[in-house]
Length: 439
Image (cartoon, rainbow, N blue to C red):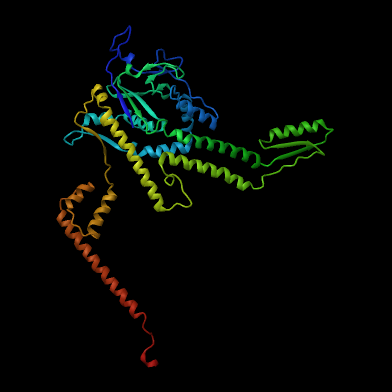
C-alpha cells in the first residue's frame, strides 16, 4: 500500500511573504461566508441510485487519461447511510480505535511529551480517517499546529483531489488545480484497493434499497384492505359525499363506483412466498456487504447452518484483518510521518509508536491464580498476588493466615465427617425393619 508524505516547509507566494501561514494552509468553505477558501465545497448529489449510475461512475473513475471520482464519491456518501454498511465499518474499525497507542523511547521508556500529543482529540479523528482510506481509496492530510500549540490536521475533501495528476481543485468540476507540492506537510495514504472497498459494496446497497422500496410498495398495495363505496348513479350529492368520506378515512386504497359497476382484484397466488423473495434478497445483500468489509458473515448475523466452531473461525479471520489495519496505522506513524512530526516540533528520533497491551481484569487474574494453585499445584508468592490484585497486605498477615488455615482445616474435617455419617445412614437405611422373631 503506497503512502507518500509530501514535505515542504515553505512555498513562494506572489505578492506576499513566503512564510505566511494562511497562504500555505488548505481551507474549505461554501460559495459565501468564507472568502479566499482554497476549496469551494458542493453538497453531495443525492439521487435515486441504479446500476446504470454505478457503472457510469466506475467508468469515469477508471478513465486512464482523465479520471473523475466526483460522481462515484457522491454514491459512496449515499452508501454510508446504509445501517449494515455503517455497523460493519464500525465493527472492523473498533479494534484499532479501541487500542491505546504510546511512543516508546529507545531505552523502552514511554515518551510522555509525544504520547500527550497523540492522546489529544485530533489523533482519534486521524486514526479513523487513515482507516477510511481503505473504504474510499485514499486520504489526503495537511498537518499544522493550532493556536494552542497542539498538532492538528485538515482532511482535504476527496472530490477535490486528483490523485493521478496530484493536484487539488478549487471546485470539484474544475479541469485544473494547484499541485500538491505547493502546500507543506501533506500526507497521502492510499487504500488497499484503487477505488476503495465501497466500490465493491455499492451494487448490493443499490439492490437492497430497491428491494426495500418494492417491499414497501407491496405492503402498501396488499397489506392494507381496500375500501369500497357505492352510490346511486343519478345522485350527484351521494357521489360527492362518498368521495369526501374516502379522503378523510386514511391512506388505504379506495374504490368508489356507482351501483351496477364492479372491480375485480387478482391477488398474488402466494403472498407469503413473495414476501420471502424480498426478505431473502435483502439478507443476501447484507451478507455480501459483510464479506466485502469483514471477510465473514457469522460475526454480524446468525445463520441457520452456522455452528459455534464455524463462528470462531470467522471471528479469527476478522481479528487477523483488524491486526492488518493496526499494522497499517503503525507504518504511517513510524515511517511516513517522521518529517512531518519534526516540522511540527515533535521529536520522534530513535523511538517508535506501539500498541499498549490491555491488562487483565481482576476477575481474570483471580481465576488464573486459583487455577495455578488448586489445579496445577503451582507455588505462587503471596506478595506477588497482593501486588497484582492491588490489595494492601495487612500488618498482622502471618497471624491472620494461620487462623484462616486452621479454620479451613476445621471446615474440611467437618465436611468429611458429615459425608461419612451420610454414607453410613444410607447403608443401614437399606436393612429390613423386621426382627428375627418374625421369621
